[in-house]
Image: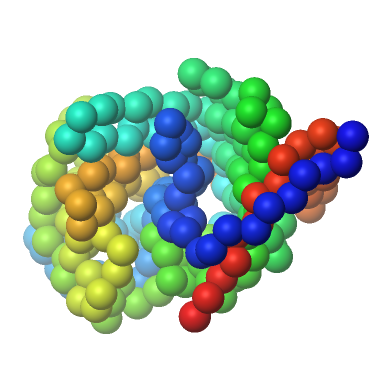
Length: 237
């Protein structure tokens, strides 16, 4: 049977489950290659500076994630494994509570839900990445220029031994602020929370991070299965 294809108007890049959500609109994410931030005390200065050094030469990164979506009435938790590769390659394998797949091949993204036999396709480039929180996953930006940075402990921490910061955008964005939690010993990003203007919260917890591992570009290719309904999201300026 041929693939069925429909076209929809532009929508937020996040697809939530049942609300099904993909890693971005979100998204998602690891803060990589951030520039040095103003000092907020010696411990904070060290954590931020060392995180910058750790990720300065990163070309690939992988690990496990737990994603929690919370609004006024529900809390949804999903988990799985991810791989990222510069400039804009991503693969997020959702394994619990149901299997889903999100792939970015540098030109398009594919969000595939096997149980529904549906895939959502949208154009996506490294340049477009800079307009979403995903800019922190694979590239750098002048944080001091784009955000007000302060200590913040919203939503609670995973454990002790971390430094937590709140980043408030200086210009209009799709979210109110971000929360970053950095490990004081390894200087890995342990947690990132995104507070949307609606009050909804997307929280990522990362574990078992590995950097500069060998990952073939084939990892980020997706072939749409037969007998799958295809939804194409158009981008409009």
